[in-house]
Length: 156
Image (cartoon, rainbow, N blue to C red; front, side):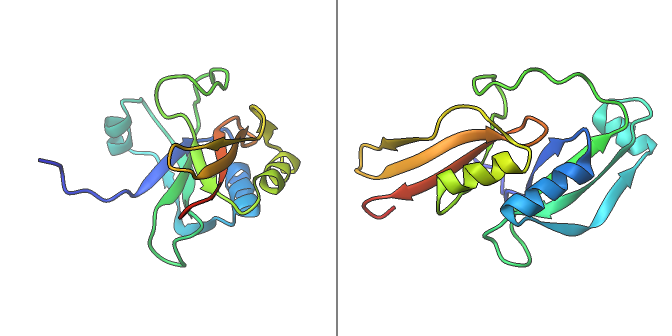
């Protein structure tokens, strides 16, 4: 039997949470959900398994869900960070976040102009049911992979 659940948020651990939050606000129209977080306590250490952990950050409301409710992008920054592995699309674990956009090429150009980077090329694939998806991978300024996608065709 499945657990009664509702999707709430995805977390990005940032080197500079304010700068990364500004990127998602400027490029995708995400809006900050108060309050900002600033935690340093025994319960944070217990929950994270870290010693003397300190994190700051905020939640950003994702576009397309109205002014209230809906899932968020939680962007946190820890005082002490581990080195980041190279960005690749085929590493096991969480791989990317995706945004549906009207024009993938235009959105890609905007991400790149805002400090993101390309991962591969923009492509269009046809699914077995006749729909077409135009998509690409890019990264945000900190190297997190973003998929940009637009669907067309029968009942896209």
